[in-house]
Image (cartoon, rainbow, N blue to C red; front, side, top):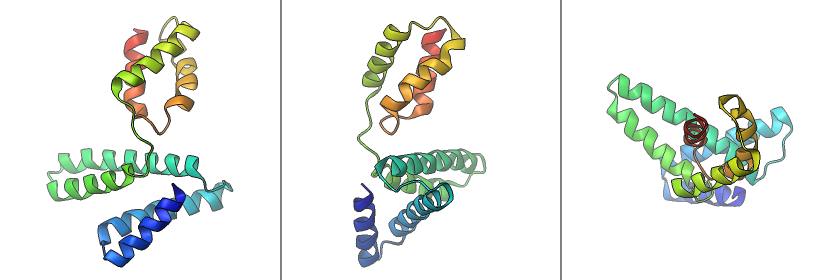
Amino acid sequence: MVEKLKKDMIEAMKAKDKERLTTIRMIKGDLDKEHIDKKREINDDLLIEVVNRGIKQRKDSIAEFEKGGRSDLVEKTQKEIDILQSYLPEQLSEEEVVKIIDEIFDVLKPEGARDMGKVMKEVQPKLKGCADMKKVSEIIKSKLQ
């Protein structure tokens, strides 16, 4: 996926697609920053982590832009999210996510909300990058109640 990012950056330069190029450069910059600051190897796992963080930030921005009535910025930010999502593995459906959570519940047998951390610890490696973790957290909370 890191190679795909590099190829897409070159293609965006050739096509003079400024929006796509800017977004890809932001991802690349964040990847390089993680590599330098935290001495982490640039690989697909790091790319997924950086892209998920970028998507989360942009979703928060959209909420603020909507409050401010800035539909132009909402549209621009949504396009950035769409570009970022192309660098994530295929997203699981809600049914598939619930099935995985149910399997973990069968193993752990959580007794209440205080076991949320245990469940998330098991769920995260299986679903990270494949599902919106905010939605996963909401599903787990509803099952624990």
